[in-house]
Image 1: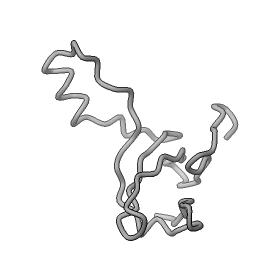
Image 2 (image 1 turned 30 degrees about the horizontal axis):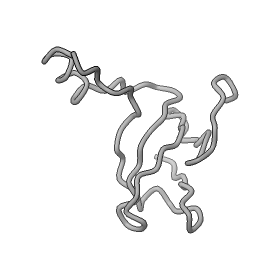
Image 3 (image 1 turned 90 degrees about the vertical axis):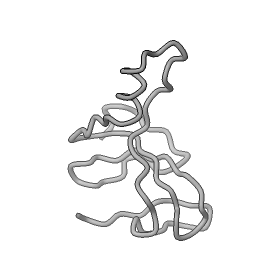
Image 4 (image 1 turned 60 degrees about the vertical axis):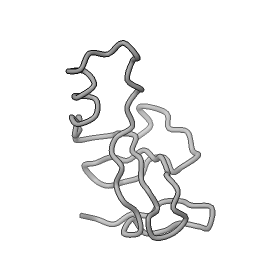
Length: 89
């Protein structure tokens, strides 16, 4: 796995300081069935490509950060706080 850095208020930090929190998904509807709730909690898309992700800075700020990353190359396309335009990769 190639290494990358994530932007924090204190500068760019190596991904080794973070814990992966998974892909960003829309909230579960209030009227979701049990099967939908189970799928929402446990099943991941595991895409080979661009996805929004959450990372927890477990060895530093203890904050969650959202970024956009291409899972095929580990290239970060948008750091926390940056906008990502689909198709700009």
